[in-house]
Image 1 (tube, rainbow, N blue to C red):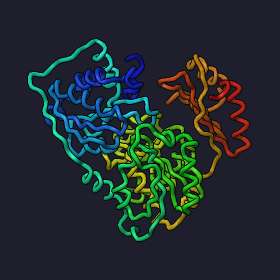
Image 2 (tube, rainbow, N blue to C red):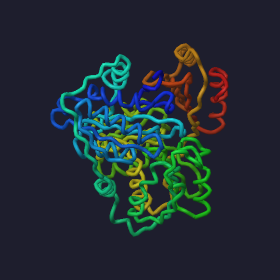
Image 3 (cartoon, rainbow, N blue to C red):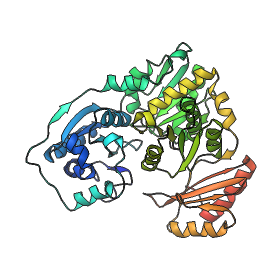
Image 4 (spheres, rainbow, N blue to C red):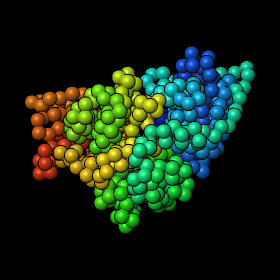
Length: 451
């Protein structure tokens, strides 16, 4: 079990690290991470899975553990992670578990958890507690075994997501190429076909071996086929989903990727027209243009550390309208504060149709600075290196919200430690590409060779 209990989920190689025995044990202890008052109202857990061949046996073992612990289980079958979140909120269940390894390669699998209202399972009473209980074998069998029911929520979820489509712009047809990467995004086809677009599907066949490319839209090499097809088809937009379809990346009509931080700004600006003065949460790796744009659109930008549990908590606490992360997660107040890639697609279509402009045209006002991608450096003494950076840039504005952020008037950078790997991750931004290159070279001399 070593190392499979991560900051936000359980993830590991199947069957060496994560197998049916461990899945059943997690099911037996999951009750401990749930709210007792919610359990008293509705002692049920929503369970679903992705398309990996070992997801079904893992789900079966997990469900057996949950039932043995006395919890009821609502099995919604093969589903995306956002569908699981929706089901937890829609059914007012005490929690939910999705069997998936998201964007990881075929030999991995995992478990994603949520509490009532699609809240993350986090903090000391979350995944660390589950790990401790599993390790010490603290399993309590209920006197009465729980009840298992199966339920199809496809229509309810479709109606929910499509309710945000602006009906006044449906007649403006857009040609959209969508790359499902052989992942769960392929199950979105019926919903996409109801969006009033000319859909060009790419790699929609469910295949947990990922025969065409890794289901990770953060890596540019995984967007090449999509970019080529957008150009070949003369499409207006390209969209790439990750393995469990909770993240989306966008490509403009020229085949150029659009930064997810800028997508956060664009969707946030669109939603602010319906809810003026609302809060919009963005992760601290985002371009300065994001906060500037949100403020210009009459919103209140809130900078937050990386991680869905932090973004969701801040969004909920401030009753924010929307939040986004550089990784391509987009969170909506009207979706139980949970992430939903399909809702991001709907809002992007609303924006393009409302403005009657191309994707590159709506992004252009946000292209204010030169920015790097996230760059990994292998560093054993992470805390020591961060302290060294603080001393080196002591004349800057510095904060430690997540790792270290160093800000000067014309440029800034963030270096944060990975939760699971011996990496420090760098993002930097400058006024222009020449300054960016200069500062990047300077930082690499301090951090070492990038991975």
